[in-house]
Image 1: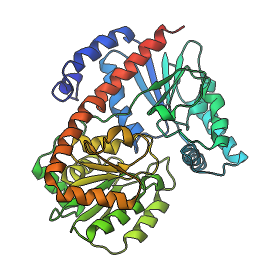
Image 2 (image 1 turned 180 degrees about the horizontal axis):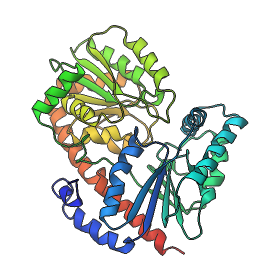
Image 3 (image 1 turned 90 degrees about the vertical axis):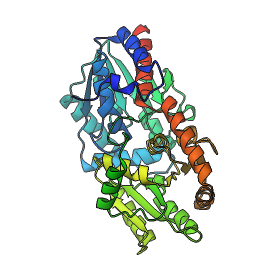
Image 4 (image 1 turned 30 degrees about the vertical axis):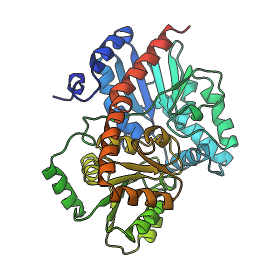
Length: 401
């Protein structure tokens, strides 16, 4: 038997499960559809794998469709992703047309019949063209929209304004739109293979299989090999720490179907690492949830040194496991890391190295920050809170004219 809502009683704040059941009565029987661009790889897919069954348990008829795209489509949408997060990209007229053609094909292929349709990120945004009368459509943007490249946003905006509402992960990601905008943080599932409790024996066995010894402190970053995650900057920070503290660095990540740049960034990281035997580059498949769990639990300090970040769920994962986290001063990381309380935020490899050395020198501080981080995650970043926010939004939209 799979995990049910009752299983969350012991890990969520008191009263959470009962409150979810009461909320859901107002939308029981509604048909809800989620659409995104990949079934595996990345936080969006991970969240949907758990949220959809939770909706169903609460009486909402939830489904999840995944759009299909060519390599050219994914190259274009990766350009969109970078442009919307502030990096200048050259998107040609042919690329825009390929993007729209792919959406037209998916509009014909996908079953878009539902009372509430949630479209995730830019890839399927033009599916609004296929909207049926009476349905409520919501555009859920998971990326940092605070400083988008104007030309790309002006192309996308006419589609977004036709939705009934938009959801962003931080207030500064909101744009001037004539539709309601909701602030909803992403979340982690505390009972999933990536976040559930593991025994010491399980952790040891998995790390042995991955070839990562536990003979010295482990510094860890888990993320896709993406320039915005700054893996080369993490290597630079490690080298600064290594001058005074004998430690290991583990960079664990992979690529996703909708991210064609991953292999190129991985090659840059391999060059930066060279032949250092204390640096472990792990190319993991999208389904390596237990491996990531074990690595995070074995880590002494966790990095998420992003230069741009929609939210950064790897931070919430590490907080839940009681680990001190050092993250980039950007996006949703700033919501999760309260300096000196749940972790530290930095702007440079030098800053990351400074706080790493401080934590390694002060084990009591590491313990306190880890304990505070876990409680912070319990109240703000678990999937039950995410479900509660979505139910509240559905109730609001169903009552709106």
